[in-house]
Length: 271
Image (tube, rainbow, N blue to C red; front, side):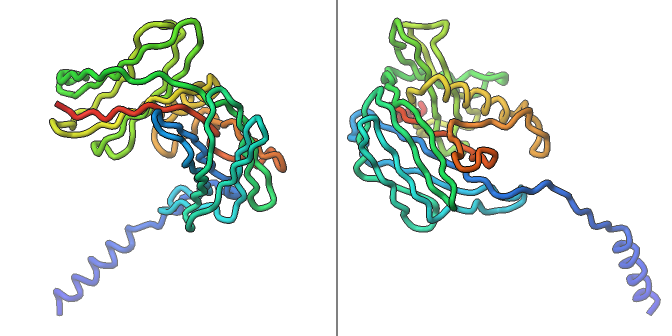
């Protein structure tokens, strides 16, 4: 019996030391998140395209709620209209008849819950990836695998590039942007480094041609989410606004960007 009461005393001592902490996070009405990246891969018709719509959610929510029931369309400069139909309940809207034309201007129009969102962009061309070089002594540790994806920048014109490096290690793609301000007409390369890559791993490398505005948008966004950008509770220096405008209620602006790019893909097997 003496031991029993000892356990009771210890139990209440432990419970009495636990304080419930409520984290008071700022909340606001959900905003629309628009993933409208029209990618025309070289050598394909480019007719199958999709737009993803979701909603912002509280920080500790595990799930990202889809935005269902929207009207989504894209119109080109010749007034051809491409209607994107919702498939399933994941907020994915697709079109099977899209016609991509280099340097043509397109307008995105989304009607969702009584509000209209619009954006205008130009479909930009891109040069192909010519070759990929591998270095196994990269990084600060001299043990990381480095990949350089080389391409030849066209002369006498301004060009802006968006790179994706996709592998299973890590599962999250590595993204970067480049411009030819100081290398116009010369050979350039996209750069990727990863310590855990091993021989036989595949890395999908994609290069997209983009507008200057998208380049600036991604440059700022990547700076803010980099490792030097602070922890998840640190206030961001500024909200990164895309090119999509809420015409009905400008203060209730969405997140995301409407981009159209020609894209080249190179699948590299690590040596």
